[in-house]
Length: 208
View 1: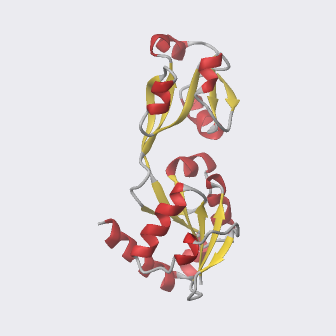
View 2: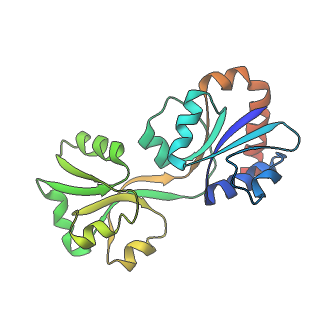
């Protein structure tokens, strides 16, 4: 049996589509249920439905053999995993955003940044030798500059529509090519190679 850690929400639905195209029985993922542990009818796959940020934790621990997570989550978590495949879905960028007329704030000696990517922000600005104040937020990040809580935000941007609706723009693109990735536990990747490698090959064919 191969065990997957899948992020709940839109990415889980897209993941199920891709896995189904590879011959994986994902019917159980389309059931209307509140269960968080699901097993395919053929008994070959088990799925854990978890918060996106928790996928790397389950995979690194070995509780899950494989997982699907956004590159932004992998950068933020910094877990010891094998990043096997770019699934080329959910493309976005990690950006610094704020008011267009306030681009000068990036040169402030004490820049206030609102973000849920606390670890990534620390690494990025430490590498630049810049001191910042990080304000951790977990939702409606765009509200921070609007209310004066922060000077800018550091967040993923896909279409930019939410930024535009709140009068904000991308001031700097820090990481581009943020997409969903297939990751594996390092030990499981070796011990279950006979099951995992054929699945990876089929995924490559589907993506091609």
